Image (cartoon, rainbow, N blue to C red):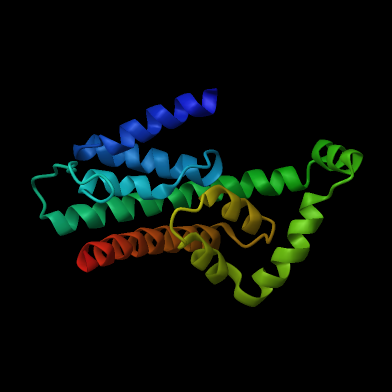
Length: 184
C-alpha cells in the first residue's frame, strides 16, 4: 500500500516537475530509485517532453537542449548519490550477523549466489558492466545496483558507473523515442 502511495505521489511530482524546484524533485526521485524504489528512471524525461509530450520544464533562461541536458545531469547525479547509499547498505547487510543468520536459517544464500554470478561479471567488466547494465531502458535500477554492490568497488567508481549508466539510459530512451517518431 505504501509503495502504491509513494509511486503515485512521486511519479506525479516528477511528471509535473517544473523550474528549479522541479530539478530538485528529479534529483530526489533519482536518488530514491537507486536504493529504495523499484520504479523506472525514464520518467524524469517527462518534464522535458519525452514520454509526456505536453510537459515542459519551463526553465526559460535556457534553450530546450540545455534543459534536457540539465535533467539528464541532475538525474545522473541523484542516481550516483543513491547508488553510493545502496553500496553502503548492501555492504552492511551482506556483513550483518542478523542477515547472515536469517538467510542461513531459510536455506538460501543470496549473497553467495549473487557473488558467485556477479563476481565473475565484475572481474571481467567491473564498473563498466554496471554502467552498461544500468543503460538498459525500463528496467528497475535498484536490482542492478544492489547486485553490483557486492563487488565492493570504491564509492567513486561505483558512483561514476551509476552516473554513466543513468545518462546512458536516458540517452538510449530518447534515441528510441526519436527513432519511433522518425519511423512514424
